[in-house]
Image (cartoon, rainbow, N blue to C red; front, side, top):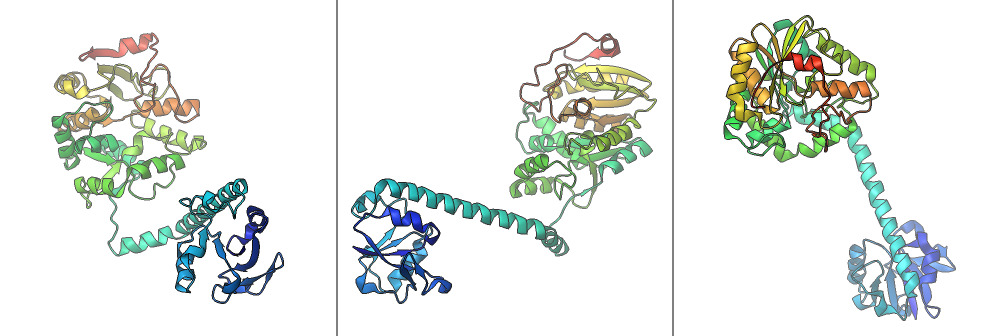
Length: 419
């Protein structure tokens, strides 16, 4: 039996071994004009338009994406029954046991599949490289044409300078707060329509002495760690972006929720930059009397010097999770103990609401989120890591807290709410 081989020339030695000993490769066929007339293994390479059809019993195609080639040959008058697509996984090569050495054929099929996947991966890598080279220019064009809109978000530096200069209160919105508004349950807060409504109303508010901060996740995310950018990209789908935009005022100037993330979202080897961020934040509470409003295992400042420049520290302790169910009791307690103090709140989405309500009542209150944990991670210098004596709802297993007895911590507690 005489056959024509089309494609797969880079693996010609393997192809020669795949056929039974009585099978003769009569000619090679290739669509590349540069190959026409050349000799391979003593056989001539032809165009699919002029190969000697009369002497050929079968055409074996080794091209992985073979559908277009099949159609080309059929359009040229080749009987489809004469065509064998070697790499078509739906084709059982046992049907052609008189043509192929089965063990060799199975291995060669795998090699062609690997070649194909390598080619696809290289193409994807090239596309990524071309995208990186051009996406900024494409985005600028879309921005100029009004096809892309981004929320107006001040930098982290502008955010803490605003707080220091104007002694304004701060409510932060991250993905958890947005998900609650959208009717999705956060891991640390059971579903509560009142909370969702309050979060939505505050997001749209404009109160003197109070600023709203949102995570700067909508643009280039310049300076953030690659891993963090990828997490944000995975979350910020086109649909999710539309949901957020529907809740935001695109003409309003927001501040930056990453003020509470001075370390771990940035490259962790940039220790000096992280230190400068923490030092800048310490200016907020320098020589201030502080009232912490925190979960019962949050323990801000315990075991570190983050708040050592404050004049005095007191604490109101509330539940680590589902704190909003006792919101009114927490609010009343802060009103009682927070007069003339800087109030720092770490209570998840409850803190977002509480900071606003306290600002409306004339208090200075900041929603600081995981700021103290960030400092602990910074001191260890290993990025996200387990802090045994402090609660963390972001890392699996870190809600298991080993409480140590700290006299200063116990003495600083002025009230426990629902604990």
